[in-house]
Amino acid sequence: GVVLGIESSCDETAAALVGHDRTIIAQAIASQDDAHAPYGGVVPEIAARAHAERLAPMIESVLREGGMELAALDAVAATAGPGLIGGVMVGLVTAKALAMAADIPLMAINHLEGHALSPRLAEPALEFPYALLLVSGGHCQILRVEGVGRYRRFATTIDDALGEAFDKTAKILGLGFPGGPAVERLAREGDAAAVPLPRPLVGSGEPHFSFAGLKSAVLRAHETGRHADADIAASFQQAAIDCVVDRLRIALDTMEPVSALVVAGGVAANAAMRSALEALANARGLAFSAPPPRLCTDNAAMIAWAGQERLAIGVTGDPLDIAARPRWPLDPAAEPVRGAGV
Ligand code: ATP
Ligand code: MG
Ligand code: FE
Image (cartoon, rainbow, N blue to C red; front, side, top):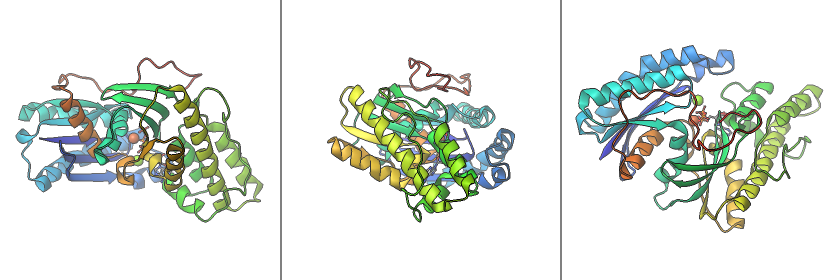
Protein backbone atom coordinates (compact mmCIF):
# COMPACT_ATOMS: atom_id res chain seq x y z
CA GLY A 1 0.00 0.00 0.00
CA VAL A 2 0.89 3.67 -0.38
CA VAL A 3 0.85 6.50 2.18
CA LEU A 4 0.61 10.22 1.39
CA GLY A 5 2.88 12.30 3.65
CA ILE A 6 2.47 16.01 4.39
CA GLU A 7 5.07 18.24 6.09
CA SER A 8 4.53 21.88 7.11
CA SER A 9 6.03 22.30 10.58
CA CYS A 10 8.69 24.86 9.75
CA ASP A 11 9.56 26.50 6.45
CA GLU A 12 9.44 23.56 4.06
CA THR A 13 6.11 22.74 2.41
CA ALA A 14 6.29 19.13 1.27
CA ALA A 15 4.18 16.21 0.06
CA ALA A 16 5.23 12.68 -0.89
CA LEU A 17 3.88 9.25 -1.74
CA VAL A 18 5.81 6.36 -0.17
CA GLY A 19 5.13 2.65 -0.62
CA HIS A 20 5.39 0.06 2.16
CA ASP A 21 8.32 -1.37 0.15
CA ARG A 22 10.18 1.94 0.75
CA THR A 23 9.69 3.28 -2.79
CA ILE A 24 9.38 7.04 -2.91
CA ILE A 25 6.77 7.12 -5.67
CA ALA A 26 6.50 10.89 -5.96
CA GLN A 27 7.62 13.86 -3.91
CA ALA A 28 7.59 17.64 -3.97
CA ILE A 29 9.18 20.18 -1.68
CA ALA A 30 9.06 23.97 -1.66
CA SER A 31 11.46 25.84 0.57
CA GLN A 32 10.55 29.31 1.80
CA ASP A 33 14.15 30.42 2.27
CA ASP A 34 13.70 33.50 0.04
CA ALA A 35 10.62 34.65 1.95
CA HIS A 36 12.38 34.47 5.34
CA ALA A 37 15.92 35.45 4.35
CA PRO A 38 15.35 39.21 4.82
CA TYR A 39 14.43 38.53 8.48
CA GLY A 40 17.39 36.19 9.18
CA GLY A 41 15.08 33.46 10.45
CA VAL A 42 11.67 31.87 9.98
CA VAL A 43 8.71 34.25 10.50
CA PRO A 44 5.75 32.11 11.68
CA GLU A 45 2.96 34.14 9.99
CA ILE A 46 4.78 34.20 6.65
CA ALA A 47 5.41 30.47 6.91
CA ALA A 48 1.77 29.59 7.68
CA ARG A 49 0.48 31.68 4.78
CA ALA A 50 2.97 30.13 2.35
CA HIS A 51 2.01 26.60 3.46
CA ALA A 52 -1.67 27.44 2.97
CA GLU A 53 -1.03 28.72 -0.56
CA ARG A 54 1.19 25.89 -1.72
CA LEU A 55 0.03 22.71 -0.05
CA ALA A 56 -3.19 21.82 -1.93
CA PRO A 57 -1.76 22.19 -5.46
CA MET A 58 1.36 20.33 -4.35
CA ILE A 59 -0.65 17.37 -3.07
CA GLU A 60 -2.63 17.30 -6.33
CA SER A 61 0.54 17.24 -8.40
CA VAL A 62 2.13 14.50 -6.29
CA LEU A 63 -1.00 12.33 -6.65
CA ARG A 64 -1.05 12.99 -10.40
CA GLU A 65 2.66 12.18 -10.75
CA GLY A 66 2.20 8.96 -8.80
CA GLY A 67 -0.96 8.06 -10.73
CA MET A 68 -2.84 7.56 -7.42
CA GLU A 69 -6.43 8.23 -6.40
CA LEU A 70 -6.87 9.41 -2.82
CA ALA A 71 -9.24 6.57 -2.01
CA ALA A 72 -6.62 4.02 -3.04
CA LEU A 73 -4.18 5.20 -0.35
CA ASP A 74 -3.61 3.22 2.85
CA ALA A 75 -3.43 6.44 4.88
CA VAL A 76 -2.70 10.15 4.83
CA ALA A 77 0.06 11.07 7.28
CA ALA A 78 0.76 14.66 8.35
CA THR A 79 3.09 16.28 10.84
CA ALA A 80 0.95 17.14 13.89
CA GLY A 81 3.83 18.69 15.88
CA PRO A 82 6.19 19.81 17.23
CA GLY A 83 6.75 22.98 15.23
CA LEU A 84 5.32 26.38 14.38
CA ILE A 85 1.68 25.87 15.26
CA GLY A 86 0.18 27.85 12.34
CA GLY A 87 2.04 25.79 9.76
CA VAL A 88 1.38 22.51 11.56
CA MET A 89 -2.35 23.30 11.59
CA VAL A 90 -2.38 23.96 7.83
CA GLY A 91 -0.93 20.52 7.12
CA LEU A 92 -2.96 18.65 9.72
CA VAL A 93 -6.30 20.24 8.74
CA THR A 94 -5.58 19.46 5.08
CA ALA A 95 -4.84 15.83 5.98
CA LYS A 96 -8.04 15.58 8.04
CA ALA A 97 -10.11 16.89 5.13
CA LEU A 98 -8.53 14.40 2.72
CA ALA A 99 -8.96 11.51 5.15
CA MET A 100 -12.60 12.37 5.69
CA ALA A 101 -13.36 12.94 2.00
CA ALA A 102 -11.70 9.70 0.86
CA ASP A 103 -12.59 7.65 3.95
CA ILE A 104 -8.99 6.62 4.62
CA PRO A 105 -7.07 6.60 7.93
CA LEU A 106 -5.39 9.75 9.27
CA MET A 107 -1.94 9.41 10.80
CA ALA A 108 -0.92 12.34 13.03
CA ILE A 109 2.86 12.12 12.96
CA ASN A 110 5.40 13.50 15.41
CA HIS A 111 7.87 15.38 13.17
CA LEU A 112 10.73 14.12 15.35
CA GLU A 113 9.55 10.55 14.82
CA GLY A 114 9.73 11.27 11.10
CA HIS A 115 13.40 12.26 11.52
CA ALA A 116 14.04 9.34 13.91
CA LEU A 117 12.72 6.68 11.51
CA SER A 118 14.02 8.27 8.28
CA PRO A 119 17.23 6.17 8.35
CA ARG A 120 15.08 3.03 8.04
CA LEU A 121 13.44 4.42 4.90
CA ALA A 122 16.88 4.65 3.31
CA GLU A 123 18.26 1.44 4.78
CA PRO A 124 16.05 -1.69 5.00
CA ALA A 125 18.69 -3.59 6.99
CA LEU A 126 18.63 -1.10 9.89
CA GLU A 127 16.96 -2.87 12.82
CA PHE A 128 15.88 -1.69 16.28
CA PRO A 129 17.33 -0.87 18.73
CA TYR A 130 19.73 1.82 17.51
CA ALA A 131 21.42 4.84 19.05
CA LEU A 132 20.20 8.01 17.37
CA LEU A 133 21.81 11.43 17.25
CA LEU A 134 18.94 13.74 16.26
CA VAL A 135 20.41 17.08 15.23
CA SER A 136 18.14 19.65 13.60
CA GLY A 137 17.20 23.31 13.71
CA GLY A 138 15.22 22.98 16.92
CA HIS A 139 16.52 19.81 18.57
CA CYS A 140 19.75 18.19 19.67
CA GLN A 141 19.20 14.86 21.35
CA ILE A 142 20.64 11.40 21.80
CA LEU A 143 17.98 8.69 21.90
CA ARG A 144 17.80 4.94 22.06
CA VAL A 145 15.27 4.00 19.38
CA GLU A 146 13.75 0.76 20.62
CA GLY A 147 10.85 0.46 18.19
CA VAL A 148 8.17 2.51 16.47
CA GLY A 149 6.82 4.87 19.14
CA ARG A 150 9.42 3.71 21.66
CA TYR A 151 12.13 6.30 22.26
CA ARG A 152 14.32 6.82 25.30
CA ARG A 153 16.15 10.11 25.56
CA PHE A 154 19.65 10.09 27.02
CA ALA A 155 20.70 13.64 26.23
CA THR A 156 19.37 16.98 25.12
CA THR A 157 20.73 20.51 24.83
CA ILE A 158 20.67 22.84 27.80
CA ASP A 159 20.54 25.87 25.47
CA ASP A 160 20.81 25.96 21.66
CA ALA A 161 20.22 23.16 19.16
CA LEU A 162 23.14 22.28 16.89
CA GLY A 163 21.40 23.49 13.71
CA GLU A 164 20.70 26.75 15.52
CA ALA A 165 24.43 27.08 16.33
CA PHE A 166 25.25 26.58 12.62
CA ASP A 167 22.62 29.19 11.69
CA LYS A 168 23.92 31.72 14.24
CA THR A 169 27.52 31.17 13.12
CA ALA A 170 26.37 31.76 9.53
CA LYS A 171 24.68 34.99 10.61
CA ILE A 172 27.85 36.20 12.37
CA LEU A 173 29.87 35.45 9.23
CA GLY A 174 27.24 37.11 7.01
CA LEU A 175 26.44 33.90 5.15
CA GLY A 176 22.66 34.23 5.17
CA PHE A 177 19.89 31.82 6.14
CA PRO A 178 19.70 28.84 6.43
CA GLY A 179 23.28 28.71 7.52
CA GLY A 180 24.29 25.07 7.84
CA PRO A 181 25.12 24.34 4.20
CA ALA A 182 26.93 27.70 3.80
CA VAL A 183 29.08 27.15 6.92
CA GLU A 184 29.95 23.67 5.67
CA ARG A 185 31.01 25.00 2.24
CA LEU A 186 33.17 27.78 3.74
CA ALA A 187 34.68 25.39 6.31
CA ARG A 188 36.17 23.30 3.48
CA GLU A 189 38.49 26.22 2.65
CA GLY A 190 39.53 26.89 6.24
CA ASP A 191 41.92 25.55 8.88
CA ALA A 192 39.99 23.81 11.66
CA ALA A 193 42.87 24.34 14.11
CA ALA A 194 43.32 28.07 13.40
CA VAL A 195 40.85 29.55 15.89
CA PRO A 196 40.83 28.36 19.52
CA LEU A 197 37.20 27.70 20.47
CA PRO A 198 35.65 26.05 23.54
CA ARG A 199 34.07 22.57 23.59
CA PRO A 200 31.23 23.15 26.09
CA LEU A 201 30.45 20.24 28.45
CA VAL A 202 33.12 17.98 26.95
CA GLY A 203 34.33 15.67 29.69
CA SER A 204 31.18 16.01 31.79
CA GLY A 205 29.67 12.76 32.99
CA GLU A 206 26.18 13.32 31.60
CA PRO A 207 25.88 13.34 27.82
CA HIS A 208 24.01 16.66 27.44
CA PHE A 209 24.86 19.40 24.94
CA SER A 210 25.49 23.12 25.16
CA PHE A 211 26.25 25.38 22.21
CA ALA A 212 25.51 28.92 23.45
CA GLY A 213 29.07 29.43 24.72
CA LEU A 214 30.52 28.18 21.44
CA LYS A 215 28.40 30.66 19.51
CA SER A 216 29.54 33.53 21.76
CA ALA A 217 33.16 32.49 21.25
CA VAL A 218 32.61 32.52 17.49
CA LEU A 219 31.22 36.05 17.80
CA ARG A 220 34.26 37.21 19.84
CA ALA A 221 36.72 35.57 17.45
CA HIS A 222 35.01 37.29 14.53
CA GLU A 223 35.06 40.67 16.29
CA THR A 224 38.84 40.56 16.79
CA GLY A 225 39.19 40.81 13.03
CA ARG A 226 42.27 38.58 13.26
CA HIS A 227 40.83 35.45 11.68
CA ALA A 228 39.75 34.56 8.16
CA ASP A 229 36.04 33.70 7.95
CA ALA A 230 36.86 30.30 6.49
CA ASP A 231 39.10 29.51 9.49
CA ILE A 232 36.31 30.52 11.87
CA ALA A 233 33.80 28.34 9.99
CA ALA A 234 36.17 25.35 9.97
CA SER A 235 37.11 25.78 13.64
CA PHE A 236 33.46 26.14 14.67
CA GLN A 237 32.48 23.03 12.74
CA GLN A 238 35.33 21.04 14.29
CA ALA A 239 34.43 22.20 17.80
CA ALA A 240 30.80 21.18 17.20
CA ILE A 241 31.89 17.76 15.92
CA ASP A 242 34.24 17.25 18.90
CA CYS A 243 31.35 18.01 21.27
CA VAL A 244 29.01 15.62 19.50
CA VAL A 245 31.53 12.76 19.41
CA ASP A 246 32.42 13.18 23.11
CA ARG A 247 28.75 13.35 24.18
CA LEU A 248 27.90 10.29 22.09
CA ARG A 249 30.73 8.32 23.70
CA ILE A 250 29.23 8.96 27.13
CA ALA A 251 25.72 8.14 25.96
CA LEU A 252 26.83 4.87 24.30
CA ASP A 253 28.59 3.89 27.54
CA THR A 254 25.38 4.61 29.46
CA MET A 255 22.74 2.91 27.35
CA GLU A 256 22.02 -0.78 26.85
CA PRO A 257 23.75 -2.25 23.81
CA VAL A 258 22.71 -1.22 20.30
CA SER A 259 23.83 -2.56 16.95
CA ALA A 260 24.02 0.72 15.07
CA LEU A 261 24.82 4.40 15.46
CA VAL A 262 22.44 6.51 13.40
CA VAL A 263 22.28 10.25 12.69
CA ALA A 264 19.23 12.14 11.42
CA GLY A 265 17.88 15.70 11.16
CA GLY A 266 19.12 18.62 9.09
CA VAL A 267 22.66 18.71 10.51
CA ALA A 268 23.06 15.04 9.53
CA ALA A 269 23.47 16.37 5.98
CA ASN A 270 26.91 17.70 7.03
CA ALA A 271 29.63 15.55 5.43
CA ALA A 272 32.31 16.26 8.07
CA MET A 273 29.85 15.35 10.82
CA ARG A 274 28.91 12.14 9.03
CA SER A 275 32.49 10.99 8.63
CA ALA A 276 33.35 11.72 12.28
CA LEU A 277 30.33 9.70 13.39
CA GLU A 278 31.16 6.88 11.03
CA ALA A 279 34.66 6.73 12.54
CA LEU A 280 33.17 6.60 16.04
CA ALA A 281 30.81 3.80 15.00
CA ASN A 282 33.70 1.84 13.46
CA ALA A 283 35.79 2.25 16.61
CA ARG A 284 32.89 0.88 18.65
CA GLY A 285 32.12 -2.01 16.32
CA LEU A 286 28.73 -0.50 15.47
CA ALA A 287 27.09 -0.26 12.07
CA PHE A 288 26.67 3.34 10.91
CA SER A 289 23.67 4.76 9.11
CA ALA A 290 22.72 8.23 7.87
CA PRO A 291 19.97 9.02 5.39
CA PRO A 292 20.92 10.71 2.11
CA PRO A 293 21.11 14.50 2.70
CA ARG A 294 17.73 15.24 1.05
CA LEU A 295 16.07 12.96 3.65
CA CYS A 296 17.96 14.64 6.51
CA THR A 297 16.45 18.11 6.14
CA ASP A 298 12.68 18.48 6.39
CA ASN A 299 10.75 16.47 3.81
CA ALA A 300 7.43 14.64 3.49
CA ALA A 301 8.83 11.22 2.54
CA MET A 302 9.95 10.73 6.16
CA ILE A 303 6.44 11.65 7.36
CA ALA A 304 4.83 9.18 4.94
CA TRP A 305 7.37 6.56 6.05
CA ALA A 306 6.55 7.12 9.74
CA GLY A 307 2.93 6.51 8.71
CA GLN A 308 3.96 3.24 7.04
CA GLU A 309 5.89 2.18 10.15
CA ARG A 310 2.85 2.82 12.35
CA LEU A 311 0.55 0.91 9.97
CA ALA A 312 3.02 -1.98 10.05
CA ILE A 313 2.78 -2.30 13.85
CA GLY A 314 -1.01 -2.31 13.68
CA VAL A 315 -1.93 1.33 14.34
CA THR A 316 -5.17 1.88 12.46
CA GLY A 317 -5.16 5.69 12.51
CA ASP A 318 -5.73 8.71 14.73
CA PRO A 319 -9.08 10.38 15.54
CA LEU A 320 -10.07 13.19 13.16
CA ASP A 321 -10.32 15.64 16.07
CA ILE A 322 -6.69 15.17 17.15
CA ALA A 323 -5.03 18.49 17.96
CA ALA A 324 -1.85 20.04 16.56
CA ARG A 325 0.89 20.26 19.19
CA PRO A 326 3.56 23.00 19.32
CA ARG A 327 5.53 20.78 21.73
CA TRP A 328 5.63 17.00 21.57
CA PRO A 329 8.61 15.21 23.13
CA LEU A 330 9.58 11.82 21.69
CA ASP A 331 10.28 10.53 25.20
CA PRO A 332 7.54 11.90 27.47
CA ALA A 333 9.27 10.42 30.52
CA ALA A 334 12.51 12.37 29.98
CA GLU A 335 13.19 14.88 32.74
CA PRO A 336 13.60 18.53 31.77
CA VAL A 337 17.24 19.57 31.87
CA ARG A 338 18.09 22.99 33.37
CA GLY A 339 15.73 25.24 31.42
CA ALA A 340 16.13 23.28 28.20
CA GLY A 341 13.28 22.68 25.81
CA VAL A 342 11.93 19.21 25.18
P1 ATP B 1 13.19 20.47 13.98
O1 ATP B 1 13.29 19.26 13.15
O2 ATP B 1 14.00 20.43 15.24
O3 ATP B 1 11.78 20.90 14.20
P2 ATP B 1 13.83 21.94 11.61
O4 ATP B 1 12.73 21.08 11.06
O5 ATP B 1 13.85 23.38 11.31
O6 ATP B 1 13.88 21.69 13.17
P3 ATP B 1 15.63 20.50 9.93
O7 ATP B 1 15.01 20.91 8.63
O8 ATP B 1 15.57 19.09 10.29
O9 ATP B 1 15.21 21.38 11.19
O10 ATP B 1 17.12 20.99 9.89
C1 ATP B 1 17.43 22.32 9.56
C2 ATP B 1 18.72 22.67 10.25
O11 ATP B 1 19.78 21.86 9.72
C3 ATP B 1 19.13 24.12 10.07
O12 ATP B 1 19.55 24.64 11.31
C4 ATP B 1 20.28 24.03 9.07
O13 ATP B 1 21.23 25.06 9.21
C5 ATP B 1 20.89 22.67 9.44
N1 ATP B 1 21.64 22.12 8.31
C6 ATP B 1 21.18 21.79 7.09
N2 ATP B 1 22.18 21.36 6.29
C7 ATP B 1 23.31 21.41 7.04
C8 ATP B 1 24.70 21.13 6.79
N3 ATP B 1 25.10 20.69 5.60
N4 ATP B 1 25.57 21.31 7.80
C9 ATP B 1 25.16 21.74 9.02
N5 ATP B 1 23.89 22.06 9.30
C10 ATP B 1 22.97 21.89 8.34
MG1 MG C 1 14.00 24.82 6.45
FE1 FE D 1 12.92 18.92 11.10
